[in-house]
Image (cartoon, rainbow, N blue to C red):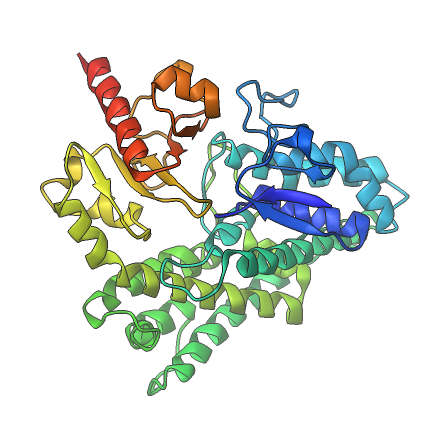
Length: 414
């Protein structure tokens, strides 16, 4: 029996699940809200504050200082067994270290707020797979689809390393030429799906998307008045990162999707990119449908708090909002997928882990009774070690916690 957390999922427990499925063939997995490890005869990860959780105040760190996430802890202890199960015997240590550096450690860093976010990476694609605010798909269904994606990525990368160790280096230049052709094909495919009149096929994927993107977004039920913005955002999210050379990032970033696609090869790589592109369009259409709702909630903000009675993607809308209240709010309160209500600090920028709030240091990383005693809020359940998110069992308690954090934030400015 295996247990991880319910609700929104992230790359660490998704990739960890893929590794465990390889090691144990099939696993009986439960995704739960809360768990006490001592009371469960199960392999528990990314929840429960046990050996394979990383939400404790005293996180386990690598020699380079990067904190482990659940997948890093599992890879540390079981990675070589996973590789042996896949038939890897020669160069086992090299496989282990390479995969750790290229796939696992970046997931660890980003999940702990210690890396640098970048578009179209393993981590960002898995995050994108969470159900949209107005989607019919359940979180469990989306989770299993993401595990399948992670399994494909991991096995593809292992196969790639095998060719490297056999001195059969991949022709990356040829791979990027193929990628350009596939991107254009994908854009034309969705344009045809949207019944666009294809009068021009000259140019690359960027040209095709600029030409037909608005009609595609409208076909995906994006409000017509927001379609132009949607074209820009999908281009920035998917087409630009795969069309241009990546910039040099200062921090650790997750593995680029275009390289995974090239590694997977013509058929599997194209199929993966097709699903991701479709997901990006659906995600943006859904987000833009929620824009008006989020703007209404911003206008109703009180005491520096935006309340979303129904969760919808809010960061992009809030950070770009022209509402006079947008710059005056510190955090957002919304229902948690795991039950109860959460607060989340508003980031200083879309890619920033820093927020507008300052949480008392002694509260960060605390949970349940200890947190309740520190805050004076009986229903308090958790505050992330970095303080940017936390939650309680009820709306009223989360508002109380949010107001306490805002009061502390204001006091630190004096």
